[in-house]
Image 1 (cartoon, chains in turn purple, green):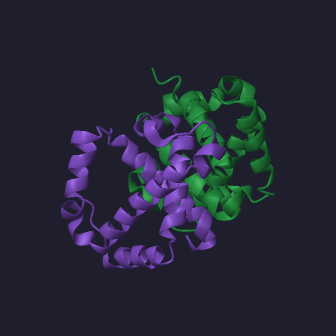
Image 2 (cartoon, rainbow over the protein chains, first blue to last red):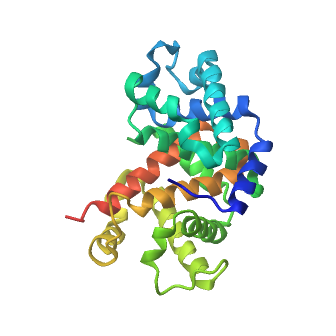
Image 3 (tube, rainbow over the protein chains, first blue to last red):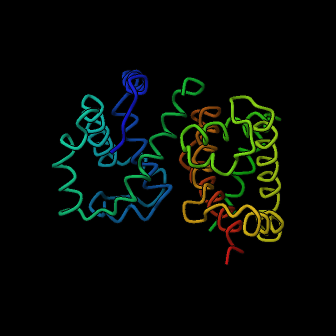
Length: 123
Length: 143
């Protein structure tokens, strides 16, 4: 498990306070589907994912992005018990959704880039 | 596979860096050493403190090489042939975790902080594909 120093926890909470969860979530998920198109396999019922423009404007993508990032927010409030916080979601992604965990790393990397583009030098 | 559109976007974005190559290289390396400490193991002979001459010098080298690669995107294998040899036979940077992955991620973070909204999903995708292609070429001769 990852451990954060007190300073790191503060930095995370500080950044998160400035994040627009709906916008960033939508953007991060859209970019995942655009930059790593094979991830679209998990979203075949989301409708039109045929181009970057379609993906970015897709309301299901936006809504789901917001959901995902809201969960991240829950984790941030519970950094000392991420395992517990994500226990049900972990089961869901494994047993029902069958998502290769490598995809979580991809989303994480994308989110970091989204935050970097929003926060500029502050990041 | 890099499309013509990808190549155009990459060249455009590189053109916007306006001579800040050395800074971008140094910042990329610094972020990489900071966020992915195992990458430091390849530089035991370096002063790894922030802003060190060695980090600046090496950052500039790396970004210059990427610039060369961008001018030769239709023939990356040949353009990076010397570097490919170097990484395979001398440096032997671990290919699967290829620190290139970490380097690529940090480079993208630096570009995103500088370009903000201009670092659109399309540009992001093109740069990601390009860095994957570079990593693949550098790993070509490993075995």
